[in-house]
Image 1 (spheres, rainbow, N blue to C red):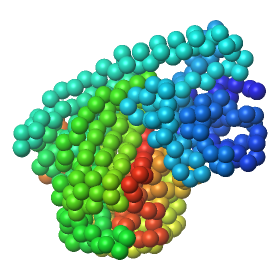
Image 2 (image 1 turned 120 degrees about the vertical axis):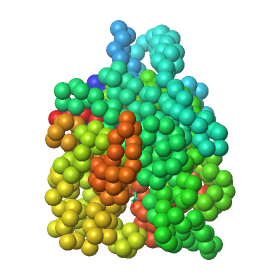
Image 3 (image 1 turned 135 degrees about the vertical axis):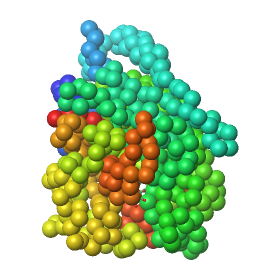
Image 4 (image 1 turned 180 degrees about the vertical axis):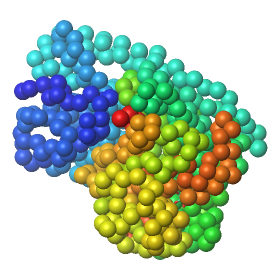
Length: 505
Ligand code: GLA
């Protein structure tokens, strides 16, 4: 059996498909595997299943009747040793016959878990590995784990106090290439992101404020974690199981981005969860039953990781509830790849991997239709500059005052990360690639920015001086049964992952 991991891409290289290799095994056809994504993780028919997969399986014990197991592993690193090679994998998700078994794995696993399941470190040994070497391997693994703890030196600085006296901090996550992301636990907000241009010159490419006060007073949602429901819910109303729920109205007649005090205006608990994958910050927030009108106590977690081996920020959202509720979490970072406060983004070239979008009415509420982008100025299937078509006489652009729509992503899998968008700034050469597990993305062209906001380092932010790519379920889904559901029930686990990767051209 060839060593499949020899050819598997390293964690740091996003060759087409990033990480999350989804491998579906049809157990009824013993000895054959059907690899359903374009990313080949296991090249040979597994007889029996490849060892890494089996390692995971022994902790989840699928019932004999289980017919389909979906396992998503993220390859972290491969190391060669004289006695063989070790591959470190993180588990992203394990679904047995449609039921999420990842949490069970977390609890039953005797392996070291670093706070969250996706941080579980697994090994794969060569098939020929002598049994005696197992001890050596175990010892090596412990060393690796010990090192990963030691690497977790993220910087923390005070970021000011809220008006009611709560202190907020700024956490600086970096990798060895100097890529740096600063996050505050006020609002789970990405405050700055420094990436190199084609000459290696660093610039902060997201809009924001210098301290917590700016975020408290701000209305633009700069860099914030948006919840409990990202984007709009018509009339702040939805019906679930026959009961009508009324949410706060903060956008005319409608509910927007979680209401009057959304997740972006709350103070979150912070924990350093760095590992060999990179420096990482876990933020958690308990949204109480009834907050902004939503039912159920929702326990939300967001893990921000600056990947060790590439200039990428991974954001993982998790949530559970004690009553049936709705959830749609996202991040509202405003990007300007030329640097924050450095002109408008109309010359940036954008690609959206989406053949359809959800048209809206004048209040930006989806009509329910999924419409083709063909022959419309919303077609970004091929890279095109943002500016040239933005002022066209098109009803959707008039309603949005520019681009402010949800695109329906063309995905190959409902669980794995798929490439959603790319933005390129010809001036600086910076490229942003967005991958997500979500079905939709809101491309917002900064239409409400009007030069009145004074942001970081004294910069002002003129009209369309940034764009947002908010990965999400579709706006107003609770009122559109034909949209993918945003309902979360007790016992279920809400999971969503988005990766923002930076490079240059
Ligand atoms: C989202 C919305 C926009 C606007 C911005 C924040 O992108 O769709 O209409 O509210 O957030 O200003």
